[in-house]
Amino acid sequence: MFSRLPRIETAVLAVWIAAAAAVWGFLGIADEMHEGELDAYDRAVISALRVAGDPHKAIGPHWLVESMRDVTALGGITLLVLVMAMSVIALLAYRHRLEALVLTGSVVLAQISSGLFKNFYERVRPTFAVYGDLPTSMSFPSGHSTTATATYFLLAVIVASLDPARPVKVLAFTVAALLALMIGFSRVFLGVHWPSDVIAGWCLGAAWAFAAAVLLRILKARGYSVRRTST
Image (spheres, rainbow, N blue to C red):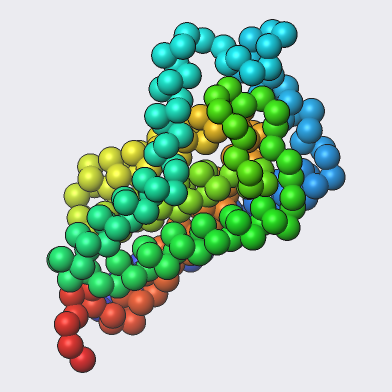
């Protein structure tokens, strides 16, 4: 155990630095947004995804819009709750109680923090919605991007910690990254979020995932077994 301690400490430090960088990135974007310095960038990006002269019509064929609607649902609260519930059940079935607890707590806190920041910054959503009515909540940060990033990246962390095979680790993080990127892009494409909302959501969600990874590392280093059934 002692021979592994430096390696564990290095890993914890690296992940902690990543979490701090994600928090710093979120706060930096929030500050720029609050001062209005991202308005031109946001409008330029979202306008580039619209048909000229028709802000409510996205570029590309109709099937692309339908696909983006399907993709954005992957970051919706309903699907994420189902993903988390099934993951927790699977972890508990294999007696990985620690991972199940950290996953649940981190995803819930990510969702709550997103809502709190929305109410704090009170940014109005863009008026470029491609389909249906605009959500009633505020715009900054993107809740889909925040919670999806926290959920999928933390699941990747858990999978990587339970399976030593490098290809499995690479696959887990690749899938998590692709899901986060696709969900975030879909929110901008469909006109329900500004690009900076999504980037801030990625940062906030990553911060929660990294913080949870640090917590798991620390608890395991102190001898908390994922399979311990009794004291």
